[in-house]
Image (tube, rainbow, N blue to C red):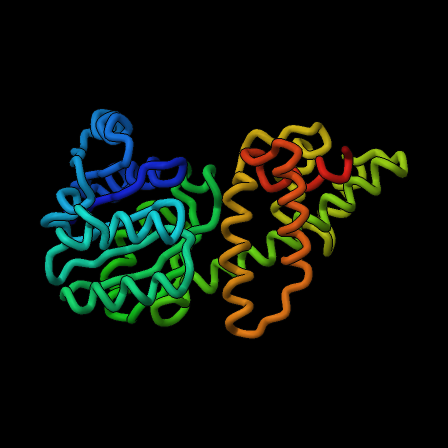
Length: 289
């Protein structure tokens, strides 16, 4: 059992922290910007909450964060009362936020100066994966730090892989989002075409899902997509945030991402339709309007 701190109790962080407590058997203390949510988590999981990230991180062996974006991450780490002011020497900070590789390297340098380890460890699997403790975790950092943290990270995951040095976890998550963007657009167009052609979509998917066109998105989202139900899963606002990170990195490294850039604009159209909180499969709604 380790002393663990968890900062950020959103739709992902709340159940992740719960798995660290229940499945991992760790002593978990939490912080959330909304104190009431942290108190609710502490009551539900028989843990503890603290009023600032710095107090939450104090004396912890492992400190996790899962917040919104680069600015949020800086605020809860190096900002006033940030966790980096409380992390002890020799501890390990694991960031599960989907953020830029740049901020990961920036924070890793600060952590090194302060004498503790840092891993960028974005996750994939969505809210369902977090609730079921079945996330895929893409980790950047040195091997020794990864080896120490992996057994703790496994409390909420089904796959944990070291992708390289600090920043590599975030870069791998970018690859993940590029692939998903193109896949969901392709699925949306296929379903749209099939419906316009008057086909039995259930029968079509039953056949093609067993072949090369099959995917998790097809198996798990096609029914809700054709029913126009987009009130679950990963929100369009968050996907646009992720694609912004992807496209910024592509401008730096020279990668050509014409499809990702186009799908990003399609998601902008979905936002204009009022779909900010719709899940990413709502690309079909844009075609059906």
